[in-house]
Length: 128
Image 1 (cartoon, rainbow, N blue to C red):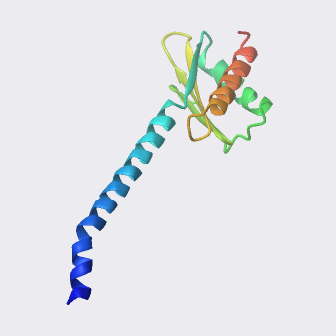
Image 2: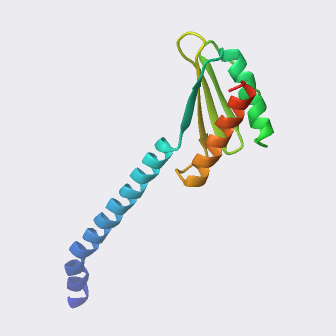
């Protein structure tokens, strides 16, 4: 009888540990989402969408990012996946185009640096 009683007495403690572990996993997942969400650099260029799209493709190649597939430019913009980078080229008002860059999965100094370098390369190709 004692063999059955001891596990029953320990059950509430085990469920508390499970709850704490689940809360910790939830916190880690939340941090991952926030980091992923914040890992985007962006710049607006006073250049037409098509010109900015071409400059982005050339900038990615110049920075040794391998473009996956054949990105297509739509009327509102394009999404380009190239290695560890994802780039969104978006039409804004008039001839303004916004370029958003995410390098890597998580927010880090190095990923932000690489994103800014890519935006700088695109700007250089646009004459900025």
